[in-house]
Amino acid sequence: MTELIGTKSATLLQQTFSALQEDAEFTAILGKRDLSLLFVQYDPESVVFVSAEGVSFTVDDRVPTLRFELSGDTLHQLLTGRLSLPRAAAARLLNVKGPVARLRELGEVLPRVGAKYGELAARQAA
Image (cartoon, rainbow, N blue to C red; front, side):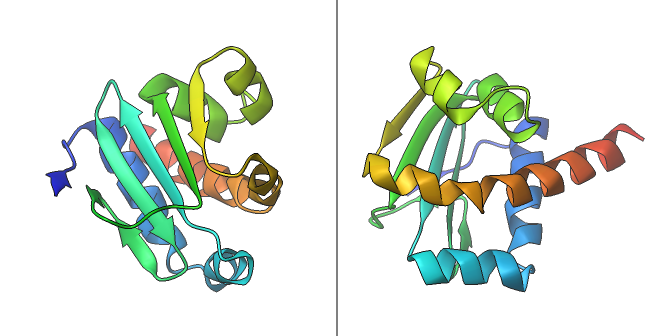
C-alpha cells in the first residue's frame, strides 16, 4: 500500500471526502449507481478512493469505476467550478480511466463534492 503524502491540499481533500461519507444522500447516490472513484493527485501527491462503503487514502487492489489522474491545481479548479470536467480532459489536464459513459453519473456527485470542498476551504481560510 502507498500512504498518502500529507499536505494542506491533500488534507483538505481528505476532510472533504471524510465529511461526505457522513452525507447519507451522497453515499446513497454512489451505492445506487454502483460508483467508486479513485483520485490520484500529483503536485502535491495524494490518493483518495471513495465508494458507498467508505473512503480510503491508500492505494490497494480495489478497481474503481472511474480513475482520475490530475494535479492538485486542476482538482482544485474542478471542485471550485472554475474548470469543467470536459474542458479539463480536452486540455489534457486530466486523465480519466474507466467507462466514459459513466462520467455522466458524476453530475450528481461532483456538485456535492465541490460544495463541501468549498465550505471546508472557506473555514480554513477564515
